[in-house]
Length: 230
Image (cartoon, rainbow, N blue to C red; front, side, top):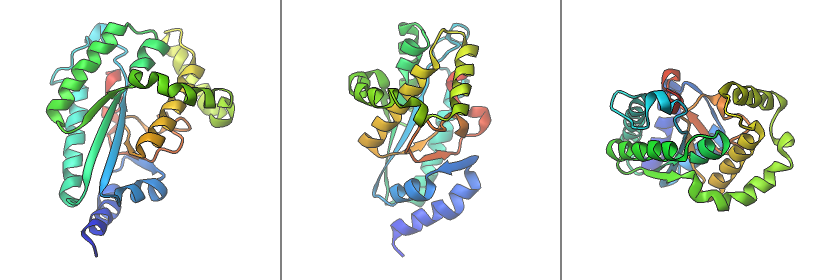
């Protein structure tokens, strides 16, 4: 058996069943075929700090963000050890527009937080890439337009209601429909541009419907999920 096949077999039969905290999405149809490629792109979106007034915008070593990055580094190091023929590319996406445009956070606070995150990422996973969502604002416009008029066809009523409750509870006068359109546009753009495996930093329920055709893995313990939320 080829070394490549042995590595993917290890992932499928040993790593995934022993480490997953929630069931993957599109495991057979997306995750495994993409793992069989020599170059594997991983993708993790990252939100802004909504409690920046109490936590500040600078990430320190004791913060959850650092614990998550260390967890991811140990995880991908193990993957690399058992799949040595693979070249992993990992893109972290700072979701700045979700904070500034959708949830009315101060632009400077969001920018400073993501600057701090980028510094921590370059220290913990130096080969990872950090992208910022606002850099793709214009490129995302056609995707927003595609999903806006058919939003109720793409999002189930239960997810729609859940998003509305979250927006209300956050108390930032945000429109949950704008958030859902943004998530759908992001997922579609990222899938078409990168064809990645998403390594999610949130619980599976947070990705339902809005991530569309992105293959997704869930290894992060619940206590570490959504580190930007504190």
